Image 1 (cartoon, rainbow, N blue to C red):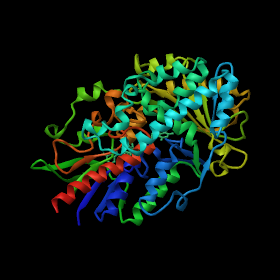
Image 2 (cartoon, rainbow, N blue to C red):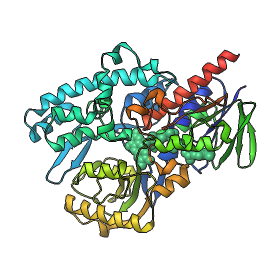
Image 3 (cartoon, rainbow, N blue to C red):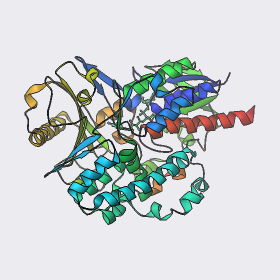
Image 4 (spheres, helix red, strand yellow):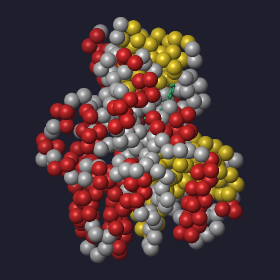
Length: 488
Ligand SMILES: Cc1cc2nc3c(=O)[nH]c(=O)nc-3n(C[C@H](O)[C@H](O)[C@H](O)COP(=O)(O)OP(=O)(O)OC[C@H]3O[C@@H](n4cnc5c(N)ncnc54)[C@H](O)[C@@H]3O)c2cc1C
C-alpha cells in the first residue's frame, strides 16, 4: 500500500487526507500541536467556547460538496443554522444590518441611498455569474498552467481581471457606507479592494446571495467532522508530532523526520505554511528564494482577544464589524506603510447570542479581531493598549459598560502565529489573492524540484479561507492520485 505522510492538520491537510484515504492509500497526518485544526483550533475555558481562528461560515455549498464526495452530508456531523441577521456594521454615524436575504438587504441599501437597491440587484446578479464560473470551474483547476484560466466564460469577462472591485463598486454606489459594505467580503482574500480584481465580486454573492451560517458549537465542529471522517476512512492522525525534515534521495521525497524518527513514505504532502515547508528541505531542493517570499503580498496578521463576559450584552449581533474609523487609513497601515494603526477597524463575534452552547447561562463569549500588517512588533504592552482602545470604542458604540464584566481574556498575535503554526511573518490567513498571485501564479501544488513532494493550503492554490482550503486539499490529492496511477 502506498504510504503518504501529510504535514499539518489544518482544513487543507484534513481534506487531502480524506480524499487520499478514499483512494485506498495508507495516509498518516503529523501535526506539531496537541490538537488538530491548525488555525481553526478551539479554546475552551470556564464553560466558554471560542473558535481561535475562522468564524464566518460562508459558501455552504462547498462544505456540502466536500462531505457529499464521501457519501455523507454536513447534517451527518453538525447542525447548520443560517444567521438572521447575517451581521451588523457600526459606522461613525449609523449602523447597517445585513439581513438573511437579498430583499431585506435591498431595503437597507435603499434606506441609505435612494435607488441603490436596483444597482445592488444587478451587481449581485453579475456576482452570481462569477461565482458559478469561479467556484464550479476555475478553482477546481490545479493552477499548473495559464491556459486553465482561458475558457469561453473568462475570455468574455477578461476586463474584470484588470478592473478592481474598488473601482467597480464606486461606479455604482456613492454612499461611503455602502461602498465599505460591498468592499468587506473581498478582505477575506487578503488584499486591499483596490488591488483585488473585480471578478472576485463572487465573494459578494457568497455574502448577500448564499448567506452567513453557523455550525452549532462553532466552526471547530467542522474540524471535528473532518477528523471523524478521516478516521472512518482509515487515516492515522498523530498530534504533538513536529516535522523537522522532509527527506529526499536522488531528487525524490522518501519520507519525513518526526520527533527525531524517520518515517519512510512514498509521497509527502505538506499543509503547513509553504515557506516553512520548504525550510524543511535542503537549500538545493527549495523552489522559492527568500526574496520571492519577501516580494509577495501576504494577508494580514491579527491581534485577537478571546473574552468571557459574565453578563449578556446588548445592541450587538452574532457578527459585528466596527467600521467607525477610516477604512483607507487602516488599509494603508496594513499594506503600504506597515505599522500599528492609530484608529483600528475591528471585528467582534458573540456566537453565544445565537448558540447557547458557546457560553455559560447569562454569559457572553466574545472574540475581538484587529487586522494588522504581518511581522509587526508584538508585545504585551501593545496588546493591552489596543484592547483598551477597542473596548472603549465598543462601549461607546453599543452604549453599555462591559469592561467590568470581563471574567477573563486571552490574546493571540504575530508571535503566536509564528510559534504555533510556523506562519510566515505571522500572517493570519496566507498569501493574498491579487491578480499577480492568482491560480498558476501562486506557489505550486507540486514541487518542481523534488519528485513525490506536494503542497496544499492557503499559501497555494486556490487561496485563503476555509472553503478554498477544502478545495486545495482535494486538488493536491487529485494530483498525487493522477501521478500514482500513471506509475502503476
Ligand atoms: C484569526 C483568523 C480568522 C479567520 N477567519 C476566517 C473566516 O471567518 N472564514 C474563513 O473561511 N476563513 C477564515 N480564516 C482563514 C482560515 O482559517 C484558513 O484559511 C484555513 O484555516 C487555513 O488552513 P490550512 O490548512 O491552509 O492551514 P493551517 O490551518 O495553518 O494548518 C497548517 C498546520 O500545519 C501545522 N504545522 C506547521 N508546521 C509544522 C511542522 N513542522 N510539523 C507538523 N505540523 C506543522 C500547523 O500547526 C497547522 O496545524 C481565518 C484565519 C484566522 C487566523
